Amino acid sequence: MKTIKDGHPKHPKSRISIQSRHAGLVRGHNGDIAVFRRETNDGKDISIKRFAEQSLPTLQEHLKQARQALESVSPKTTAQSKKKLT
Image 1 (cartoon, rainbow, N blue to C red):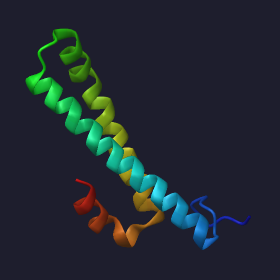
Image 2 (cartoon, rainbow, N blue to C red):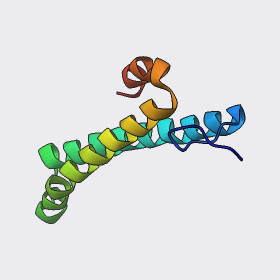
Image 3 (spheres, one colour):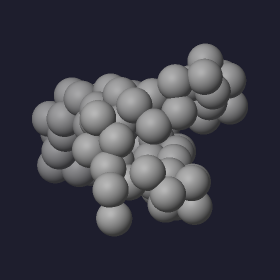
């Protein structure tokens, strides 16, 4: 299959599948970050709270990367996606 300049497949159905996967990553990371923030703020178990505090920056960086990946396959809908996914 031929690819366009950014390396993503040219076939429209493949592009939609990639968009869906990236959108799912953004949604998933948003949900994970919410849980980790809640644990950081309200957690009772100190070891879990510490783990959440240490892991939160990594999750936030992964969210940033997931958003960039989504934008690379759907630049026109990124602003709308950010609103829906945050």
